[in-house]
Image: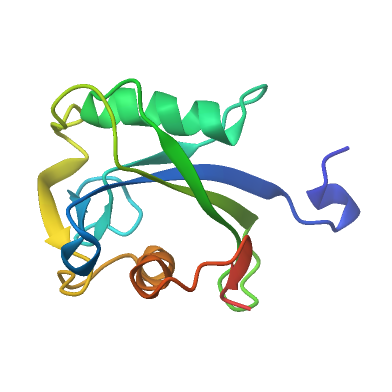
Length: 156
């Protein structure tokens, strides 16, 4: 019997990678412009992100997504926050998102899933494009202000 049959929610895990570059006052983040995904299309989002697969750690998922989506390897991941997320009481699966930053990697980031991303762009943390996926924007704002915490929530 599934969790839904018991009236419990199902937690869906995902990993996000924000590549960063530049000095602290002028830090830039690499974002992708989403298209044709069915979720948050026409929004700016992490250059690499996706579901954590069965038997995979969030770190492994972040490395895999960075390779699959933007072609970078040897990524030096730094854990930022875990975010428990919902959509204000809507009957959807609850989410647990694991956010990482990286300032070192091998390879030049490029779009590898051309049907899902229209553009990659380096953007200053203090001048992000509009719109950014709202829960990702919350994390980027916390990274910019140095106010990240190990655990955060969104949508409750």
